[in-house]
Image (cartoon, rainbow, N blue to C red; front, top):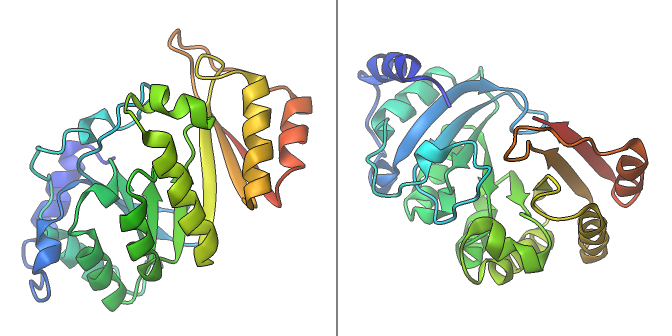
Length: 247
């Protein structure tokens, strides 16, 4: 997320924005904004809106400041909309990330306004609200779905009961929708073993996942695991597109 000084500049620049059409979308709590990215929405130049609040407590979370759903957003929607209006013709799309965007019921209205401005829309989600995701899919051009780990491990990783069935249902909705997407999994050996990682890859491929990204993260001791090239090749062979990302 941008630093506080950058947020202040965005807020100041957005004060004179057009407030039309900001009814329910104005309730969206936004904890931060990245003005430009080329990596969060494949093939698009995009801005990223970080939605406040997440029900999960993954130990490796990169945005812990966004977890608390009771925190007031750092940027009001009127300022975000004003920023986007000035970027029409310069940006291709807008990514709703988090936190967990689907936690907030105002997301659908915000997506509608963004699309009305001419932007494509993308969503980063953990899949904890499958019915909400299913309802949002017609408003989305791309989805990044986090598969936290093997189904039996997801509750421990998220520190939340009954997470796995929700993610499984979200994955089924996404696969059936035809919306472009990527599944991604964060891994280090302290989360689950390399054998479990291979079994997860087999299961995802069997379910119909074609694009999978493996994101290595540092262990609690700060060591970045090294996935050997033989494992990377074996994992890659199961998918049409495979990416190995290292923190």
